[in-house]
Length: 568
Image (tube, rainbow, N blue to C red; front, top):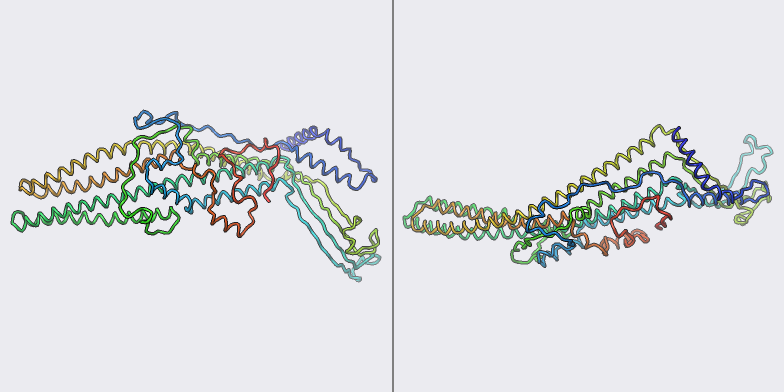
């Protein structure tokens, strides 16, 4: 009953706002007033209601507060600089032409990115469906012919007039639910936000792709260097084995020294196949990122082993709030919440009556002699005397919905609140990713510096132990231990040196850098565009040139003055 009262008050307000316009119509129901006067009045009233509308029900979206720190935890570190910086092409800090080429190839050919671009086109088409609902939702042209023959033995046929006749008809039928409560406006608002969210998702996929290509390339370089270091140690241990064999033949040492040297050599050699497996798997992963089957990437990477790219010691960061809030995944979470907020209005509009304008306009003729013209033929179908029309408004109001509509509103509201919480959590996780990557980048440099000194000491220890063993001052166990330590420390150093650029890449990814390279470029490859155009008429949806320029949420439905044109 409360809902009914609210509707009555709303309808009263609407009538008062349009009283002046309705008075000017001065509708007349007198028989002589003309057959189109009532039709004109109905169309005019519908136009006023459609243009002016009423209250757009449902909440307007506003971004919820999200907790962001004022500064980075390590802002006082000498290697952390604070300034406004553009991370559009962050990979160029490595000054590696091969990496630049890989990034460009992946952007053009990666299939995951192409799929993300297609989801934008899907969302754009979905928006087109929502736009079409602003206009008469149902319309069709009908034409028909029928021959009617009634049995003379049927009841009630005595004096029934013509029992057989032909009927010709041609008509246009339409039904238009007026957007009185903003149902369709809210649906457009939701579809608009979903479209922009799909663009943000594309940017997020692009950021991930760029980081994956760079980190996989660094991983390949790490494996190359680890294999090279292992082979260098194999050569060193072969020399040690040769020395022990000479000393054994001369009776200076026992066979134990020979077998220990041989065991260490084989153990080091056994590490190389495992490293080669990792190298091949990394190259295969890079092939997939480049959008090609696993293959020999030597033409792209070069014949020689790749050295680990040198990362700069310092990194420049901006203000946390600005950097985190411009991350595409954060924007996508915000836009998904905005789309869901509009769906609350769509659901709430079902609580109110629907005002529908229906009409049928056409021509009908028959050869029956019982017509006012005494019968006609097909040639008279489009004569003005054959014109027929039915039009009028109707109201539909599902009052007894047994709580279904209210619970649907509650459902949409709960989903909206869930997405708000998800947005806030996304902001927190984004800040964590930046802080994690930053501390990893800073401390991996320290670790690499310590391990470098450790390797220098290990090499010196190997030289000293080798000299002392040759002179008989120590047994082979000392040589064995120092060589084992050298192998381990050199391998750790290589991995630590690779962790520095890897962590810097993770930092740039966490900062949301790289998506800017798609600005002004088509989301789909030319191959996909041609295939889609060959199958379907895409109108002005392809190429996607009319997409929003920013990732800001669309304006609320109640501030939009004119409907958007449909996508034909």
